Structure formats: C-alpha cells, structure tokens
Length: 357
Image (cartoon, rainbow, N blue to C red; front, side, top):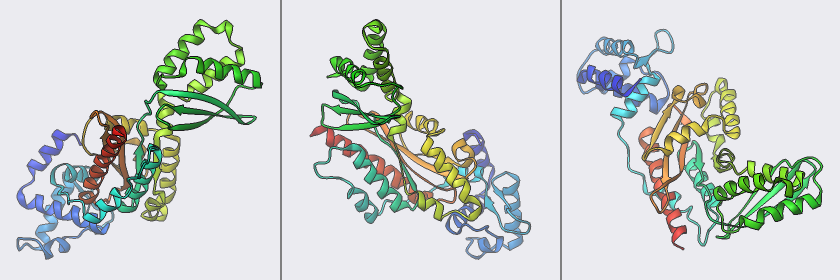
C-alpha cells in the first residue's frame, strides 16, 4: 500500500476503529494467534458488545487491513495492515540496560579486524532479538601494501591482500588452467609493481589500463590470472564477501513445519546473495531504520519474513554498511526497531574509534 493510501486508510478510520485495529495487531504480534471480538471486548476502554466489535473488524477487513485465516476464526493483520501499523501507530520501547550492555560488550580491546568485530556484533544482535542478524561490513578502502597469489589446489587459488593499516584479507578464486609457477610469479610481480599505495578501487582502474597497454609484454596465462583476481575485487564480489548472517537457527525455531523449507531457501538465497543487494542499496540511500515486510521485497515473498535494517556511518558521516534483523512478520517491532537503531549507532562509534587510533 503506497504511503498516500496508508494515510487515507488511517484517516478513514474513526477513533473506535483505529483502537480496535491497534489492539488486534498488538494482540497478534504478542500471541501469533487470530484475535476474536471477545478478546478485544474484555479490555476495551468502551463498553461495547462483541457484535459491535465484530462489525468494526469486518469493516477493517473490507479495507484490506485485517483478514480471517479460517472460517469463523478471529482476525489477523494483513501485510498492508502491518505496514500501516508500523508506519503510523507503532510505539517503540527504549533499549533496556541489559540489551545495551550485551551490545557494548562486543567492543574489542586493541581490535583492528573489522570483520571479526562485526561478526561479534551480529552474534550479539541475533542473541538479543532471537532472530537472524544481517551485517553488511564496510568496504575496505585502506591503501594496499602487498598482494600474493597462493595455489591451494589444482582448481583453487588464494589471493592475499595485505593493507597498509595491517589488515589482511584472503579470497578464494579459480585460477586459469595450465598455470605454471613462472606465470604465478609474473602475475604477482606485475600487480605489485604499482599496487602499493593504491586502494582496491584504484588498483582495479590501474590494472585495466596496464593490461590494455601492455598486453604483449605479459604472459597470456599470467594476464588471465590477473584478470581473474581482479574479478573478485569487483563491487558485486565485494558485497558478497561483506555480508555476515548469524542466528539462522533462531528463525528456524520460530517457523512451523510447513515453513521450514521456505526458510531454508531464504538462507540459501542469502548465502548466494540473491536480491539482498537490492535491499541494502535502498538502505544505503537514506538514514534511519527501514522495515521490509513480507512480499514488499522479493527476497522474503515466499517466507513471509521481515527485515528491520539500518545503515551505519563512519567518522566522516558517510554511510558505509548496514545492520539488521530478519524475523517473522509477527515481530516485536516496538522492541526490535530501537535495538537495530542502537546497534547501527554503536557500529558507527566503533568505526570512528578505529579511525582515531
């Protein structure tokens, strides 16, 4: 439902209908069960009959905000209803001292490995929220000090990137067939002749130029090796390496037998990074927590899952990554949203602290 339609739908509800809608959604988020008129009647601020409440719920169903999953059952919010509730009626809770303490405990002492630090953050976030956490690590833009290619099997090789700030990254790729030790040395020497002091993005540009201009000077297999190594540094590949997902079991534990296969397919898609770039690109365009409910993103259309995600910034106030929680649509949004927001701010402070050392 577009924002304008949501605003109109909320405007069309009188105070009674709005209160019934809010109570149905809150009860459903708490219990996961369809909500009947008698449940609403018991603690409603007005003395209304169950029949009156049923009539209001039927009106809400007509508006597309509620639905009955079974004949003669209570109502549950539709995806449009959840979106309206989240955007217009959600009341968030403050982050508890216990949750803050668990997140703050992820700060390492003398820790310079950002990936390890973010892995701890993701594990803590999934533990606190009982969902699956998602962390997009920042691109590493420190200057390169040295690069090595290391063969580890006939069909696999390792590219070792040593950065000037002391960090080291290892990435596996498929080397060209017929690779000889001499070609390996030639490729390494070719890259390191001008890699020092360049960032990864700068190195990619330089390599393209050098390979084009000096194609006849470099062995064909060595040139192929350089290009294959360069391919894993492309933006798409970097995003693949930067995605950290933790707490898969939490989401599986909250899913019935019928949904287990779909959840496993979701995690398979996350492993292959299908469609997640689209979500994270949207997140990186703006500040603040974003909520994607069910089919609002094709990544979650089959599982009916929700992603609550927020970008985080570096010391220069530039968005460089994102943190989030994946859970069922029946999520405690009032608790999860501020936790994700707090975690994003915490990661930003961690990066600022690293930059000031």
